[in-house]
Length: 112
Length: 124
Image 1 (cartoon, each protein chain N blue to C red):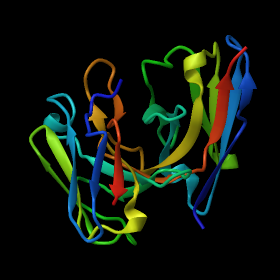
Image 2: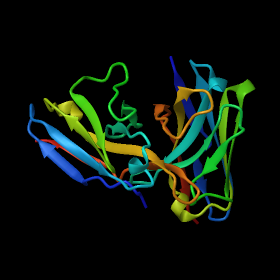
Image 3: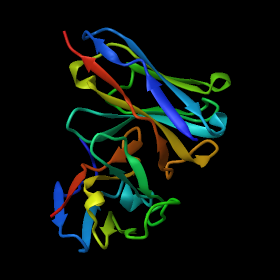
Image 4: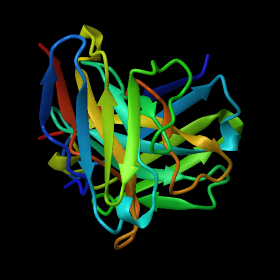
């Protein structure tokens, strides 16, 4: 099971701001490992949305922003658009036991 | 165009084996670590395994350790996943993903390029 917890779903009207939390622990986010975010549109492969906690790859709109504090991270989407309806996953590294990359439980964003 | 194309998936009986392949193009394959990530039907993402650019560093999720083997052939720009002793819980769409950072890869790296995935179904 995932060690990074996200809310199952969030929703908002077009133009609104929504945030997605990613809660970890002292062996992953709290240990200082970077958090990355992926967007998965229906029926497609995940796409890197935010890397290194708050950096956007080329081509990702500045409506998407990321932050990290303590054992948690957040993804914010401002000016919500219909095409933002997708699943979103956070990802980090966990150093407990044998160590491995870990993903969040995933959040479905619905545009009302 | 940077591209990853997976192949080798299919229907296999429990206890049998399958070998997945991932063909890379559009970037210098042997400059980057590579990973396999899977997604069970209707479920979230799970990292399966990763390998450094020169195969010197390899890691596995506990759920597949001892059963799966990752490898790469830099001359063929290809990544592989040998899956033995398959179980029903291994049923998933398997993605090949490129490490974002140049070199051996680190624990802080993201996965910046993903293939479209190949489906593995383990069932009798």
